[in-house]
Length: 219
Image (tube, rainbow, N blue to C red; front, side):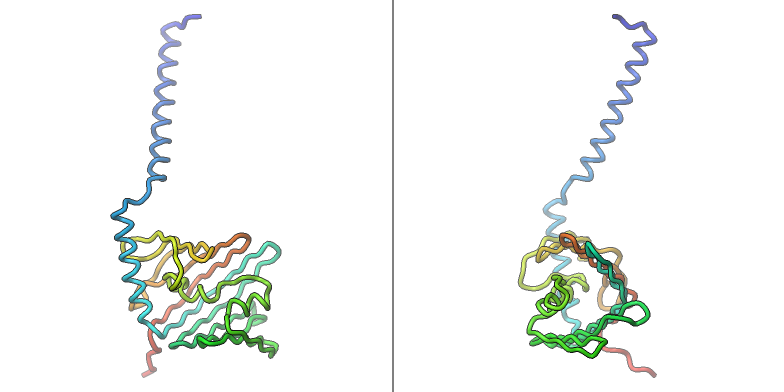
């Protein structure tokens, strides 16, 4: 059955619209799927290594923020305080209204957990200690590096970073770490939010305050 001139014009117009929509769609998909050029990847990795070296030079630092841990059967939210001076690290956790949590002390040779109920647990490895108590693999040893926006030394990693060396996505030890905004903390720009994902676990950190270097004495 033939088409009259009006029908032909409508068909042609429809085909043009379909073709234009297809070009836009495939153009957008193509742009989203384009990988970084090798030169851009090399520049980003070099900047990431430079920033990492700068951050690692700061042996004394502290942060305060909020932590949310999501598991299949529960969600825990609390305040986080973390301070490091040389090999010693002190991590304070507290739930709403100061309930729950405790203090984890690391000195490079052992990990000691002090609960708010006065109980004490210790082990040579913080990850094993937390897994033994909670039954969950929470990456305390890796978090030391990831919270500062750097990779944990000694193991390989996959990275996406910008030209300033700030990571947007880091995959290491089976964990995917996705970074949000960064803030100027003096010696370097530090993450103000990050999210760790692994299978059925999600750990989110929102950092409210960074301090790099020793505290400034009050005048």
